[in-house]
Amino acid sequence: MFALDSRLQQDTLTIGDFPLCRLLLSNDANYPWFILVPRRDDISELFQLDVADQQQLWQETTALAELLKDLFDADKLNVATLGNVVAQLHMHVIVRKRDDAAWPAPVWGKHPAKPYSAEQVAAIRERLQRVLTEHFTFVEG
Picture 1 (cartoon, rainbow, N blue to C red):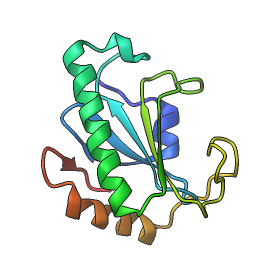
Picture 2 (cartoon, rainbow, N blue to C red):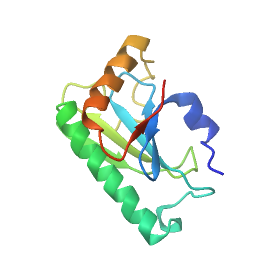
Picture 3 (cartoon, rainbow, N blue to C red):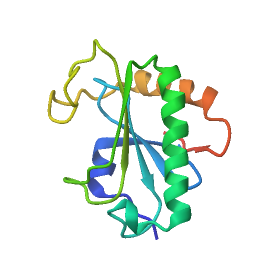
């Protein structure tokens, strides 16, 4: 049974589910920072997914990145899977702008996380609901 790592639970807000991945929003208003977590047990590396799941993860990552680029007028998207702190396989999709708090450096550890207000989260969810219309299920947040 799929269970989200406790650190991801603590640091993110759940948006919903693609066919394979749970979509999370990092609770850091410094950047629109999304995380995809394949709903598979005991997976820490991409190569541990079967080929179909690897392809599905890449399709979901690509589709999300394309939507976020337009939705947030990104100058660049950072897409990465590291897993040095949280072993559970997860894909970061981070919207970057030339005027963001960390540009041009990586976002990790650059600035303390600035939690979203309830109003900011509602606005992001509303924006996503306009564009995530196929193969996505929102969860109430």
